[in-house]
Amino acid sequence: MSPEYALRGRFSVKSDVYSFGVILLEIVTGRKNRVYYQEESPESNLVEHVWNLWLESNALEVVDSSLGESYPKNEVLRCIHIALLCVQEYAIDRPTMSAVLIMLGNDATLPSPKQPAFLLQRSATIASRDSSTKDGIDSVNNVSCTMIEGR
Image (tube, rainbow, N blue to C red; front, side, top):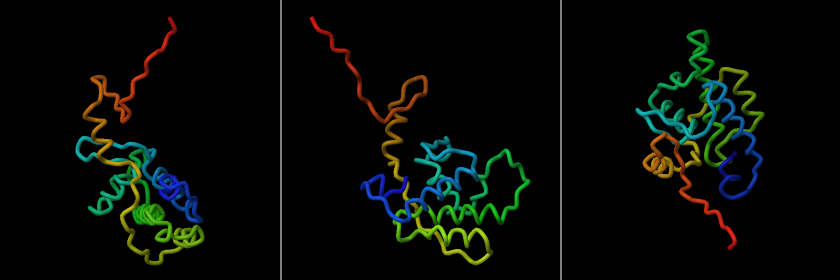
């Protein structure tokens, strides 16, 4: 879901571009875009995880391990790059879908992506981990439910 829709309820012409970028990352990584956690690098979600690896020039670490080494690295890096361009926080910074198709179909130089929108707040994710139960189930919502019975 694009940030402008999730945060303000406004759908933009480029909301579908954001969703396409997330789907592209899910295909490359073989993982869903949800709360994502690894002991060595806690992140809020898949987009943030990929972004951090991109900044470290280690983006290929996210590629689905079931592929082994049997994929064209330059094409996968290009897909990750395009996906990061699609998940920019502001719709104006995202390419149009027609531009995405052109990017996927040729080897032209791509612009550098800006930091994407993460939507999930790190503090909420970390707080939920600290208050998790002993069986490892995390919850951001600490609401209890009381059964109300008549006399």
